[in-house]
Length: 210
Image (cartoon, helix red, strand yellow):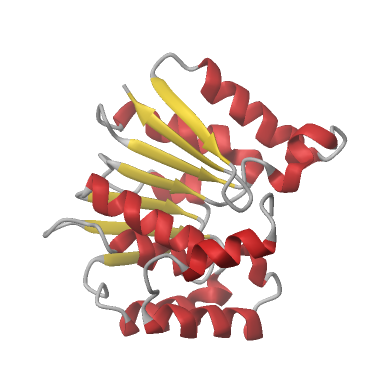
């Protein structure tokens, strides 16, 4: 986390209230998963919800479901008749994912897919106007290039963990940090988009197609 815990707590307390099922999901994730810090959490979740409400997307794609916390936040702003496809490589998480999708008001619009994201993407119809990347950091450029051609003008890609606990600028030997640095430079050089990196939790890149 880039910002201090006290700052994040203050921001969370003074932001909109999180739905009860997300509190339950956060607790179960902490109790039953090996890396619960992978969960987006209340503050980032409210940011994702706000972005989704502002964009009012028709089609959303999430790569890296984990326990579906971010999925449920992104679903909050989807316009009527829309859909959210979310892809998770680990099928062992399916029980928690489906449990909380069913608990939410969005069970009919969230479709969970399991497998390698690059393979699953090929089976989906595409034409997403909001994409959230939160899976294998080494593959971020591959995901990005697979999706950016079909992203409409004004479409948005959000990429999580783009600061990697600060290692992107202070640990050049970390292989994941190197991969993220490569991705960040790739996006920065891409004339098809405009982008900004926010120091929210572990870094969130907002990439808008021109």
